[in-house]
Length: 284
Image (cartoon, rainbow, N blue to C red; front, side, top):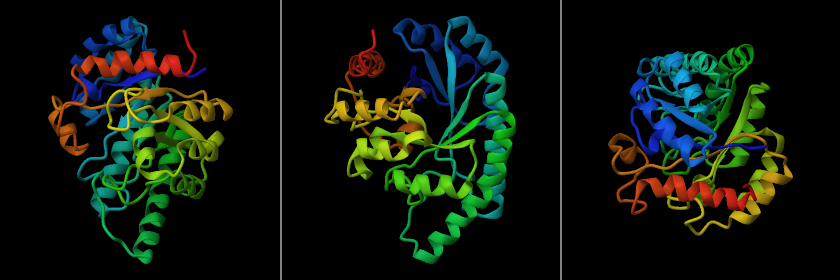
């Protein structure tokens, strides 16, 4: 049975040991899991964060890889090394956090876009595969999944669609590497969201339920019924996480192009979003 979670970017950036004060509120609202973006490994003591989650009765369902400047598996030799060490560190933290998945665009710095020709694209693809293979092996050894997320065309030119994501996962060829789909990005890039979910099938490892405007899921124009039906058809059991951003969290607001308030109240995204998801999935 899937669990419902919230990405803490809605309230904190960076997430630090102090940010665990959010946990009791999230639990009270009815979330079962929390997704923590770890912007730098030194920002958290994973043992302390896990203790706080345990105390609040929450599971840490996922760690979000924040692929900022200098972390790029298709970049310079220095950027590749930095990205490798960062993702490896996230895997180690996931183990301490009792967290099954490291998720996000684990391939390239967010915001790198360009009209690369076919030869460049192939070279970059091969480089990312080469860099992901040892990370996948390490994740396998540690019992952690890497869930790779395609982003929309304005945030990356590397992976935009489910098809491209599946091609990368198959090229890496590790049982630790799965696909992470997000309704906000799919709303821009997929012809049909439900069809993309069905195509991902057993390889779908993580799911973000986000409004078409990156606001409240269910307070938007997305047709959620076929999405829910597709997730049930493939027997998806992973977490379903609301990932939204507000103008209050400046760094992320800029990266995700959040230039205005998405909802009158920030809490609405979490509270109303969760109520909508429970209704869509027929959960009490």
